[in-house]
Image 1 (cartoon, one colour):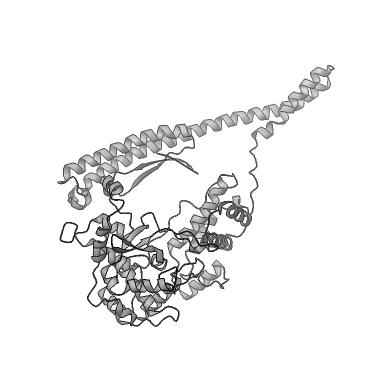
Image 2 (tube, helix red, strand yellow):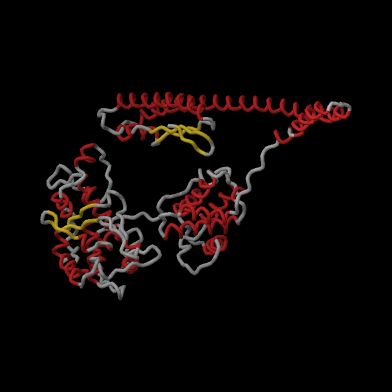
Length: 529
């Protein structure tokens, strides 16, 4: 496939699943060293042929060595055979390198020819300019006015020779501060408040790092300085809205106090927003290239989230929830209960409406579905996280026994729109989960439960427990049932699963819900007391 980039055309080809571990890549990318589409097509064809040859050779070798065609070759083949695969790949890389060298040589020859033509043209221009004065002298001695007029026209053409050879001045570009505001104005249709805040934050930080100048005048050195400074920011920067310190000031304090630094993912998000602005102005010929692409970031999660252990579950169940004066123990208990038995995300739980509780075939279920905003309250609109996020979640028997249906009836009698009526929309993002998220975090920290275990760890717990139940054993659960229950898109993309199992029978989902088993001490009613 041909891909057009700022630097020219590139070739991209997907690596077949069966040999990805051998090559170590999901895709192969090769720069074609040209901006001309017809040349790029010819070069891409040659590389396509070479790459397909590599794929065929690797498949043949792996099939010969593998005892089972469904095996993953790297997991089963003795290390003795690794050099064989490496040799095939190395031969491909050598042939590819030879092709690239040919392309670079062709580019160099083309450039040399252009330079020679350019030199010849400049010589012609100089000679022609030298002759202009001679022609002007001749014109004085020519009596025929018609001939003199024609000669004057010729002189006029010669006088323009300098303008033919002189490169055009680049178009003046706006200041970055003005350009960024114009970008937001043109691109913000459909943005949320959080989008506006995120872009303005990135713009503000960039100005603090690199100053304000014409957008065309920024270079890769500016992008590099922005990256280096942003990576040195303290981990908790920006959380205090009253903090007016600039990036250099924050970095200076972080260095002095040896504070933990911000994650690479956060810096990458800033670069992504700046890249969007530059792409917008590339199309308008107001910048020459996108200086924010091609950078690498350490996006590994600094704190690895893990599922709940029995030790921490016991600490949680034995502790009284006395953190909040606005959230009752009953609300806290059932939010935790729903999370622990359904694996639902916290915001999904907090947004459950009374109308989302429905009986399907006699089974009480939570329907996670899209909701339109209330009049004058756009933040009440709700979209599940993904297409798979819209789903039916049967209520587990353990939750019913703990009194969750009675809690729902109580909310109905209060004529509340939401099941968890005590929770309110709060924060810049207008989430219903904000307050209980903070209270839960404070509560567990006081109990000595580490940062690796959070509310979302219930989702990991449920997923792990369910996937440890073998599909073909007693009480076996099919993978597609589990994916549907949790709102995962799943890995099984066969026609049978994507077409015929779009709607898993609610009875099967109820089997999944009731298969989530905790230690005997885990009783949701104990959280209320």
